[in-house]
Figure 1 (cartoon, rainbow, N blue to C red):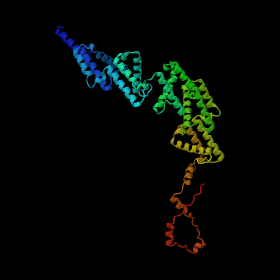
Figure 2 (cartoon, helix red, strand yellow):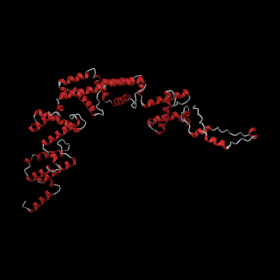
Figure 3 (cartoon, one colour):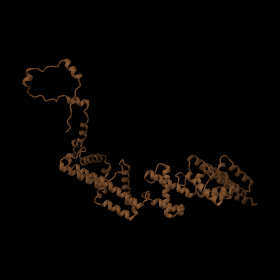
Figure 4 (cartoon, rainbow, N blue to C red):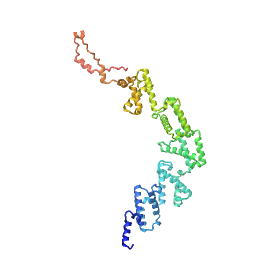
Length: 474
């Protein structure tokens, strides 16, 4: 490199924008990494995680771990920069010692228990509460095994003091005691409410009980965790087989069959399918259940994958007593049209939506609904085939006389006539109907002119209110 020309070429090469990143000094490389860490913390308000999917972020946290151990930082200048960084007000909270971090977490646990009167639960919907619960479990395990941070006597003593404190020790009972307490809560809930706690309840405590039951059922099937404990397993079996409670723990298939029987009974009693829009919540749930089964049957989903359940559903919807309630919308519409035609053929009139007979009334309302939908091209009338059938029907020589304007407006006018007449109409109705004057005047009228009423009489007529004439409803 004494050669001046070669030296210049080398300098140009290592300072070239394309190549200079490969010729940085250790300190330059270190400064770049530090700036990356600072930028990450500013943008995310946390340290980069070793579990991050982005490999570049993983590299940052590995770099931080290396810097934390100052014995690897031999360069005094770099060491000073690191110390300045971790003591900066902006960043120092991310670089507290393990002991300080542990003590902060313990304070968070105490605060949660003080405010909620219970220990944070693992199955809570809030991620932060789940984190606190998992931290407690980890500390208990480490305390028993004397490992990780629990090797530190100071930390160990603080934990021991905490779990034996009169204020908190009841929240640190054994796993079996905790399980028994949950079981007792479930029993009390069922005794009071005559149903199993729902995993969708608005009340978070009830929802947690529902989740606990689901968790136990799953663990019982797989003989996992607490269900490996023979004592707990036996207690669970006693509970779900108890005459008092076993109805709430039927198999999925038995539960499905029971629901099907409820639907059958409703149809037998009411001669109609339960509606999803019914005000009664039980009927509404039956209606939703039917819709759900129809959807799952079409897609062969969930319980409808079960051959026995699938066969039972097919038997049900094709059985003579019930199949009429499971025809398609188009078939239901065509059946209704046939009934309307038959009624008109038999009675030579259109069914009235105000008829006392509920079946005739239903046909009348159906016609009005079809007329509205036909005009607006909505609901089933958006189906072109149905639209054509309706048009053909109302334009048929046999039926079109029942669908002229006067007939179609007949029911509206009958509704209006049933209302109390207005003042103007009452005045008009109180007047004598005008008679057309005859071409030849009568003898009496030619002999004597009619008497003109006096002024007093006219004033009295104006002051005295006229009684409205009653309109006879046809």
